[in-house]
Image (tube, rainbow, N blue to C red):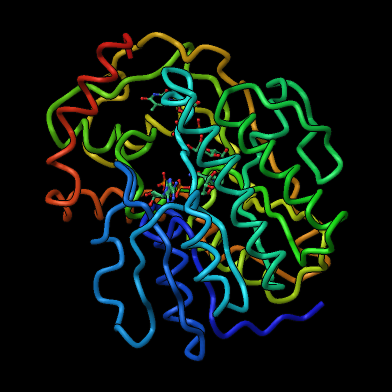
Amino acid sequence: MACDPKNIIVTGGAGFIGSNFVHWVVDNQPDVHVVVLDALTYAGNRENLAGIPDDRMEFVHGDICDAELVDRLFADADACVHFAAESHNDNSISNPEPFIRTNVEGTYQLLEAARKHGVRFHHISTDEVYGDLALDDPARFTEETPYCPSSPYSSSKASSDMLVRAWHRTYGVPVTISNCSNNYGPRQHIEKFIPRQVTNILCGIKPKLYGDGLNVRDWIHTEDHSSAVWKILTEGALGETYLIGADGEKNNIDVLRAILAAMGKDADDFEWVRDRPGHDRRYAIDSSKLRRELGWQPKHTDFAEGLQDTIDWYASNEDWWSGEKDAIEAKYAAQGQ
Ligand code: NAD
Ligand code: DAU
């Protein structure tokens, strides 16, 4: 069902993917006004939204678990795109509690407000809800793959997906869900794989590779994630799930070696570190439903080029990440990673 929203709430809009989505909307949808609702946790940064004019965006510093605040914001909105989450697997292993609170309880509060005010709700989820695939398995995840999450993070996201489905079926809330693969691009927190290794090299620290380095992730540029989400929000069928991916399967050691080469380092100039407990082996997305039914295509099909732009962004924006670097590395070192 076509949807033409003019006032949208973007939760988690000060984080990595949320802020890239807000910039995408401001740049590509001139009639749309955005209200960003973000708690500014360690992963949120108000600077991620710098340069956006006041008449295009209002920033609300608040928690998605705050039912009263959420109710007030939904009263004036046509649609909500829900990015806010605790998003890092390693953190979910050391302390699952905030993942259950934000990802499960927070999604519940938003759904209740969407139900009360009849707001169109797009839920951002992850391919990790499907568990993992073997390296030699030709299969990829589809919308029909059974849920089988491995980590506290992915099980909290799977729980939130189930709430969204139930609020659609039971209460008729107008929802869609997308499950996307690993994003890369500017403004990703330096706890994550690609920015951690790039900033390690910039700081003279050796990159760190978990386990045997053969785990596969299916990389997509965050701008392609944004265009896919807008397509689903405006043209997706209510109650449907769409997988988002750009055919970007690569193992971790190949990605690391591409970073090392791009930054003028030796192919073996890194350290092996302790593996992540329960580490998913391989993710792979079949996004043919989204491409066939909604006509979406990714623009960033050259990974080497997107990676180089990402490296350049971290090299030119040291102020954005340098204040946090020591603490992040100390936390990893305490975990043997
Ligand atoms: P991120 O950690 O960079 O940003 C999360 C944002 O949510 C931050 O701005 C944070 O302040 C905010 N937030 C956290 N708890 C909140 C709360 N209780 N109330 C309000 N705001 C809160 O995350 P990201 O990598 O940008 O991921 C965004 C979404 O996309 C998540 O839902 C994640 O599960 C999903 N996703 C991520 C990827 C990926 O590769 N990073 C891939 C697929 C799906
Ligand atoms: O698949 C989508 C998911 O991708 C999202 O739902 C998550 O929010 C997002 O964080 C990401 O999860 P991953 O666990 O795949 O991403 P991460 O960047 O943490 O790790 C990518 C791979 O790199 C993974 O196999 C673990 C490995 N790794 C990670 C770090 C931080 C290393 O080898 N060394 C590292 O230092």
